[in-house]
Length: 348
Image 1 (cartoon, rainbow, N blue to C red):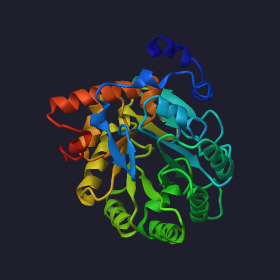
Image 2: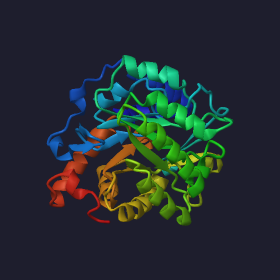
Image 3: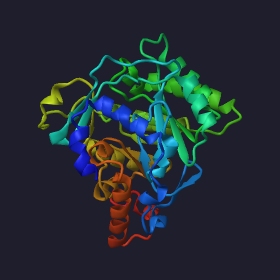
């Protein structure tokens, strides 16, 4: 059905279409049974101490202010990550700020962490407890005097909520944010995060979300710090502000982060590198170009324990998770694996 209505949706401004999707999901009219598949138990796994039905997650950026995460679980997602949430509510960058690159099955966004702020998001989650694994992606406000302090404020706010917190140091749309990929800057932030984590009554998994544009010389340093400060997982990757040369769409000149199919090889290459050096000590969540069972299998075989999608859903609609699950199960069986856990890193 989505293939018939997509032309009409794509005639609407991308951000307006996104807001319409959020409003529609609040009606909660689709039955969960519609998105079930046979033999889904093959995909079941444990992630950050919680059992989930499958490794397909919703990436941060769709449900920025934690309005429809339980509805997304009904669409078949094994886990959902909300945000990016900042300490204070902010509008983000001037519009227009989302662009469809239809010929490339991609998006460019320069949203700038638009969200309702940590207190409003906290109240929403407290009043609507998640029905499966929930991650909360945090970041600093634009123009803040101290980005590290903003991360810490959000971390303390969300300690009692959700199952994991993602420290987003990788968006290309907040000036100075990617400085946290540098060893000394990241070390200072992680030491502060660990200090408040150790003083808390809540055992919370912390993840780091990495840029696909990270320099080779920084990769080894970041991996070392992840292990030193006992970070619980890594998300590879966020959007890229490079990789435009071979794109077909005229919109490729727009500033912002590129997501979708053009990100596939970049993110998979980093997954292989991190998996090799981390030696399966912590989970990797693979993001970038996952829009089919084949693409999902390739990411997991490269070393990802779980996956996240967003742009693929824009182009293929709400049934994408069901389609990925069905195709992924078929590929797993054809390749002679008995469960998704056996696939992780098998081709790395």
